Image (tube, rainbow, N blue to C red; front, side, top):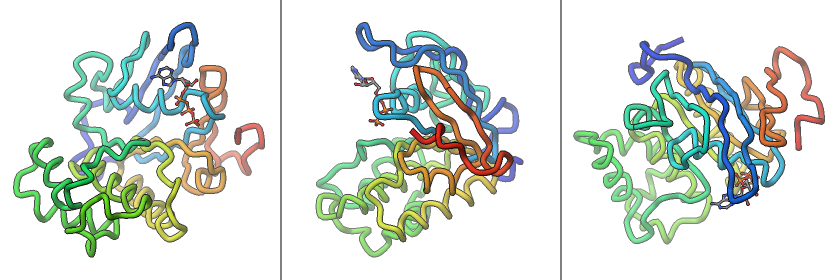
Length: 239
Ligand code: ATP
């Protein structure tokens, strides 16, 4: 389903990775990861601490270079000259990538300029509302709680209307209401034909959101399950 203008209709699957390898020194973290995420899907990536989830997400986002393999977003290569692919991706990781001395609105205006968004005021209001931060728009980031800063980082990630969201533990540090709001946002995201891949250590949250559940272990995708098609998750998935 490609119901939104930001989903390109000339490419391949939302996310495709083939033979992705990454070593840090003599430690092989990713040993040939193959994965595909389709349009309209929310895929959740599980794995033990140190399994390589963040590394994989950063490679798919074009923020870390793989040692081998190919990565494509909507059929556009990210592994070489990834500019066309990069503008289709919204990424929120462990670092918020926000400026503490700027207000929420100033941070978003800064990123809007980077993304070349014209007349960004209305769009900034929109994402602040989605992040339930409208009443904090003029507060400096350093005065926000950790959870609010995460919500603002999420607003930054969706500001340029990407087609694909890559989120590293997006629910961690959020209160129950914010987790529910994020779940609603992701469901709308998928329903509109876009796609998301996220990591989590919360089996409860992950499986509630997932159309597909992937497990990274031993440097490879060990299991790839569609929970609603296969019944309850097996405990081995939830490391
Ligand atoms: P967690 O669940 O704890 O967040 P993860 O699955 O996201 O872990 P990564 O953060 O991708 O795992 O790390 C995978 C391995 O790569 C770890 O052993 C980590 O120490 C190592 N690693 C990650 N980044 C670097 C780096 N820049 N330099 C050296 N080693 C790194």
